[in-house]
Image (cartoon, rainbow, N blue to C red):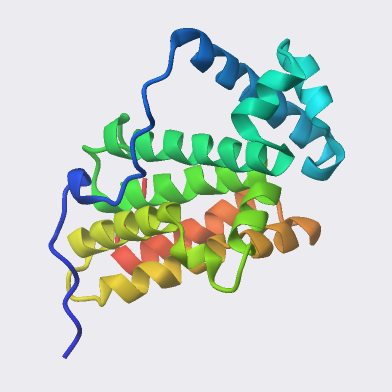
Length: 210
């Protein structure tokens, strides 16, 4: 007999990240400026080739501001990934369909896969560091638990006869950062990657993702 999944959930039962402490408006502006500058410079030069001095200069703030807020380049990289993951979580919970609520499960599943590949494409180096920080780190972080629960809920809606808890892990496995990096190095383009994932999702749900 298959193991039952947790309760069929709405978005309110997804394991979202904890709330941030309230920020002053100027502190928030500076944080977003620094993250945007870091994102651009990391994409252009690689995370390990960008200094805090360069990020501060690009953001138009003092190095001390960056250091006090993020500590070092590694802390800034973690904060940037956290920000982008939170943004994707918010789009899943509150954004328009098909990524957000209101679309059929198959369409939402394909939209999530597309969105996560886009996140990987921009931030694969950050995700790779996060997933390989320690043995099994990928599966212990809150973001992965969120993605897993979201996929399991959609699979439960489309195919409740499946072991959707296991199947969600299986569908997330091709989204590992090291595989994405390896495929891109082998000249797989983004359309090929997303198309392959959509075919998997369609096979699992028995419906077209639209």
